[in-house]
Image 1 (tube, rainbow, N blue to C red):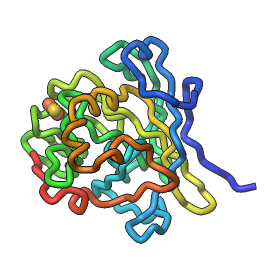
Image 2: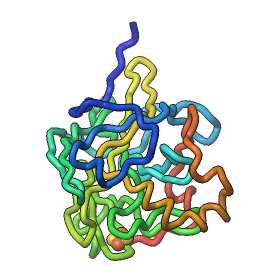
Image 3: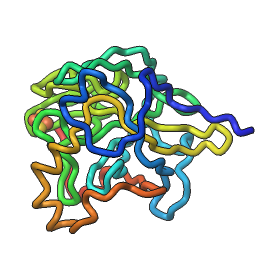
Length: 233
Ligand code: FES
């Protein structure tokens, strides 16, 4: 039997059939969406070991129009970190996965005013090196209002006005094949607000496809290839 290294869910999981609302937060649970194998642009499965450390990868999940960051950190990301959403929902982030426990994924929708990577430009992204906003680096910065998130600690907020961490994207690592799949989310999802705020733009750009769920595969690209421009701060 293949050994599978599943991300640990510290709360009971439930299949997600509807978008969550703030009222759900009091009993925050992991949300499972359709499992999507992470593949490259040639539709070949991404190998965890092949992800370059410090590179900002992006894939769309769990909806066609909701981007997520995929990062291979320089060292293991220890779990057991207690986090809280703006609405008060408590959850425990259980760390990175993969051979070195250093692979993490988060929603790329900023928890402040929902800045996200578009095809034209991204004002949010991972900074490996130092900068005035990133400090010594190895953080996710949103240049819109300078929120800073720590990807090695569940994307908790370390600076700026963001009221909660970026939502965690739950990953599954198949140790035999060294493949990765996205299976759900944990933390403060913002998809409902996101579609309400950007629905008109997304409809123009993608039509009805924007809100459709990602199917069996999610294509992973470097952020530099996902957005034409990347505003760094
Ligand atoms: S939208 Fe990201 S910090 Fe304001």
